[in-house]
Image 1 (spheres, rainbow, N blue to C red):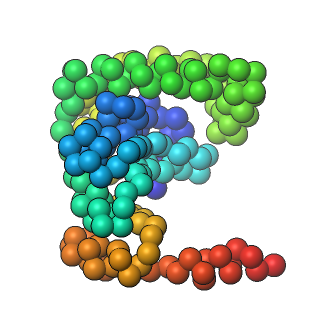
Image 2 (cartoon, one colour):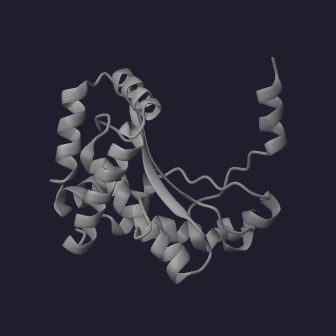
Image 3 (cartoon, helix red, strand yellow):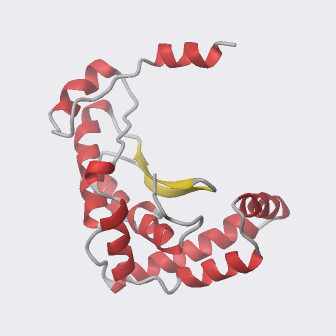
Amino acid sequence: ALRDVPPLDPVALVTSQLLGGDGYSRLLGALRGEMGVAYDARSTVETRRTGSLFLAWSAVRAGDAAVALRRIVAEMESLREKPSPEDLAPARIALENRLVSEWFETSRSSARAWSRIASLGLDAEDVENRLRRILEVSGEETARFAAEHLASGDLVLLVVGEAGALRGPLEDLGLGAPDVWPAEALASRAAAP
């Protein structure tokens, strides 16, 4: 969870955009472009009134899960370094364009966006200020955000797949022993009255 980060925080959103927001993001460049282990890789900030989550994910084959997870963690750690202007400027513009188009392109998306915005305790002026602020976020701010909120010791890493194929490679990462939650147990709890 992101502690003390306000809803729709521009710095959190731009940091997420740098990591896994679009086709030029660090995650996609690493996992698809360099390593060839994933077709897609993304990150987002899930905002709630009580707090936010910084999420990053990709679908990979079980045999590539450990190396992909290690790279995702490494890319998150690299966010502590100030991004180049060549990385930052397009990330800010793409994020602002994406939010405006996703939120306000149709009457349906506008209704959904405004109900979410209201549920966060925000109003039209708050949204306008945050959208404007996205274009002003500096590399120093994204690096500081990553250092304060994305420390590898605070990460919760979730891997979904066949436990027998994943356990050994995940243990070898040195990130701690994985907790295994059998899908059957989770499914039976969800089905219980």
